[in-house]
Length: 254
Image: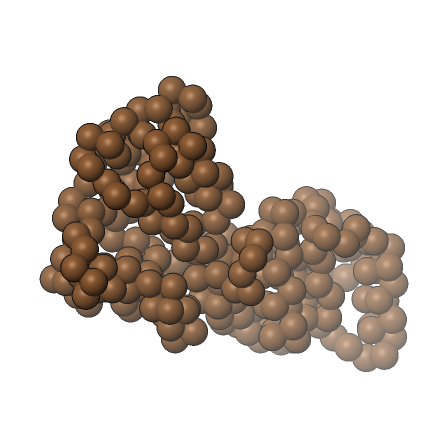
């Protein structure tokens, strides 16, 4: 997100506009937390992951009272337009805020799930793919050395874009995504066939929304009689140095 913030600020200043950064996301609108962003404040942040403004989940913004308070705050500081950076949840909040305030809203798609309608790719997705891929390459080494099967869980509760690209790039033998019902019998048959053909290790990449990774791991181990381990990559996918592709995309959106 920092690369996008930088691009937005620089573009706005070039066009003679003043930029105010709301801290802590929608929570900042309710708390009245903001600061002026200038060239100096966004200098040297293009290579930093995350956001200098910080962001947290805000349940209150989902209520009518919260939306009204946020709208009143924006009007009180005479905001002419609000740029939101995020995914579906962020944009749903922006839509409601527009209806309550009448202030124009712009949505910049940024999510590692890559599931925003109307755009081919989102800021952060490529970085997450490369971060997860780096981990899977390391897991592949130990899987091969110790003749193990690894179930690697990546993020993606409703969409499997991350699992699909990471799996393809990492040479995963099996990829499980929420969009396609998981057939564990077929998975086990594939593993048994691979073993008969002399394959000593396998990588199974699954999106978190494809099922309970622990139960799936235990089932595969029980049905195949193989040494199966689970690796949940977790929040490392949300951080890290942005890739060139993510930085350039952020600059283009800005």
